[in-house]
Image (cartoon, rainbow, N blue to C red; front, side, top):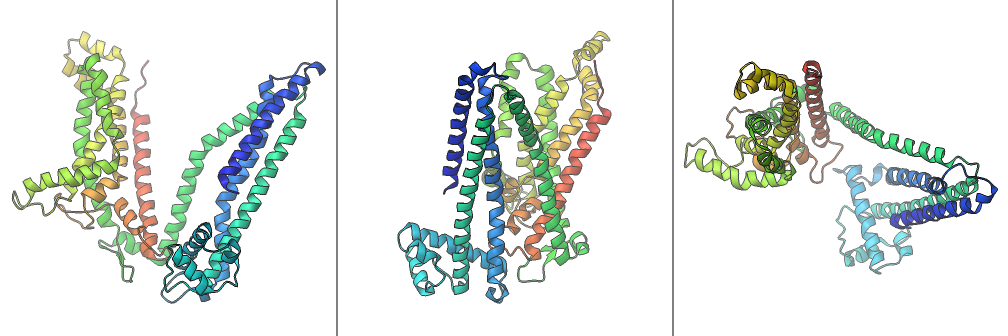
Length: 485
């Protein structure tokens, strides 16, 4: 049964339980005054139908692929892995053949029994898959076909068992809640406790997600360092991956490009954003502020891919015309550190300006009035009173913008180039950690090789960097922030 149908069945049972609960408690009103309102009895049944059923559904959908993958991998064994390949690549072929079998069955080119029968001739299946538009390479063997058929059978059985389990739980919840629906049952307390638990689970989801990401990075990073020495990763100044072997995976050229582009971006964003914040909070009138601030914040809503195209098609050629061979001769191509840094700085302007504007507006008006009362001008008040009072928050905003710059990908991919080098020339093409994470995980990468696992080590390094910046920003804000009445 498709998952969508299963969801609709559970929702229909929950709706039926809600109506049945209200009707039952209304008909039982003569036996005594109910403890709760009728809606609470209906929601009690609906919650008992939906929550256990959906929990099992979600867990089943998460666990089943791992179980099926493990069973098929064990069935294949090492003998099914040809020389020069890995079990991961063989499993990719298995999944591709399984999808081809599904397509052939859906198009009526072969029966479902024929697609699942392990005794089906390999040449016959090859012909049927070719008619369905699935071409099998020379590396697809009868063992791979058998594994694909096993994959389909296990998935089909798993989906059937899941449908039965989820439906049975929903019906059990419906019966349980209906039996509980009596005037003495404290339905309101039960529903409120259930909602409290669901809200707690929702609040914990972000924390659990972060913990899962961290453990995933740590596990794969440890696996990478078991294959590639950590001393060479952190001690080498050369980045030269090669899936044929002999790779040099030094992180320093990538870190240098990341920090260089981020510094240029902050050099652009911080002055412009800070000056814009000062103007909007201290000089602009209500009418000017009403349209200028939303217009400035529109920059934050532009997708980063659009900024990347802007860097590639507009800023790069513009810089090349000035600093290229026809100009000063410093720039060889439109993709360079300066190109990505300028565009990224434009992207970061609303981050700095909005946060700084809110922080400046939070400075009490009494400080301004006191400064004016002592004879200070508006500019003197801004320089000597407002900005010093708002400085910790502004520093925190700048550090948060720096974290955003370090994690940017698309602008770097399209605007900075792909060369991993250590250079002081801002008009040279360079790359960053995020860009190389994308390139190392793109294509048919063997995830058991250091060249693919290095992406997790790069991600872990980037995670530690951004986490450190965020913690430092929070420390600065909390330590030096003055509390005003």
